[in-house]
Length: 410
Image 1 (cartoon, one colour):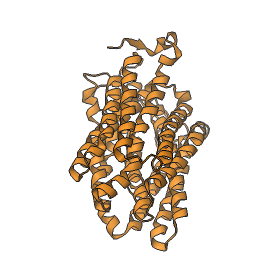
Image 2 (tube, one colour; image 1 turned 45 degrees about the vertical axis):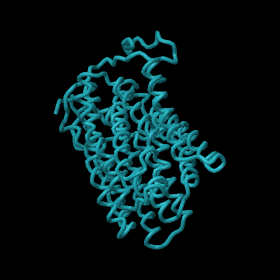
Image 3 (tube, one colour; image 1 turned 90 degrees about the vertical axis):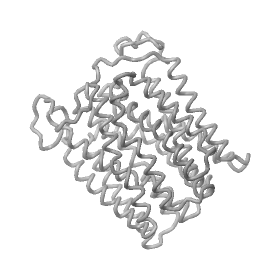
Image 4 (cartoon, one colour; image 1 turned 60 degrees about the horizontal axis):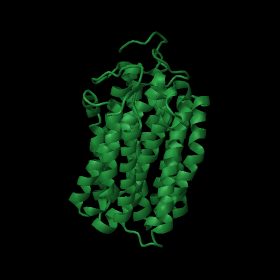
């Protein structure tokens, strides 16, 4: 077992063994497996398993079940350190991704998806908690932006290899999944073996925490999860089903997103520091309303592939501003609430995600444009919620309706 080092003592460690470097390592490792799985998914299930819109909806509903059960992290950290759980979850994500192509049936794909999703969602829950515990509040927006850029760089390398080598070397789904998933699993193992266990100064509450003063954060997490599912499930599926994108074409679109994220994510983090969380989130949600309405126009008015691809890139870029929701919570939270609230928030975020993809999959068969119109409505609700964030949130001043006062438990 790795030794335990207090965060106050990390300066005595070599620079490469400090917490921020471990966060960078995991930020690199996760998207290599998960983003590669996502990039190939639509082509894989359509070509190998003959999925239609309803099938892809069911698949993503199954994928989101572990997110809905992320609250189980609270029980696990009673007997396991958060850092260990995060790396173990990352390892599971890598292994499950590696063997995805071994099970090309509906049942096999659903089972492997469930396992990789457990790894992904439990890693993301713990990772968000550790980020907010290990990163100073004043540096959080910029640092989170750089971590997003690091993840984009790792994914860029993976996608670049797919685009360059898929046709040239005759790559298969099995080869790519094995390489990407194996790399993620190996990096998770290195993270466990080479870094000590870091001890944050504020012990985390190891029970479920629901506080009335966090109600706006909970509401925004719920709407974020509902709205994001429509983009994750159906925007990419549209590019394959309606416009016939091949693997390398879908991946090329992802490459554009990644390059923009590498450049823009640190700038967006800086913008959150300057604008504040309220203005950043209002800008994001207003932009998403326009994007989703335009997606609907592609089906209602027959707009073409160039617009669809442009909207996809803009849509993806807007989501980088979601780091403002993390820093908003960091500013209003009791330090000991970060881990249990991260788990609760992930569960809230995935309430709609469990049933929306399957239900909207059937709506997609009737009217794809209506799916995107619904997403625009969700973005509008998110915009109204964002307007309730104060310019300078803090404990006791979590919303524009709260009177500034010392933080209280409820």
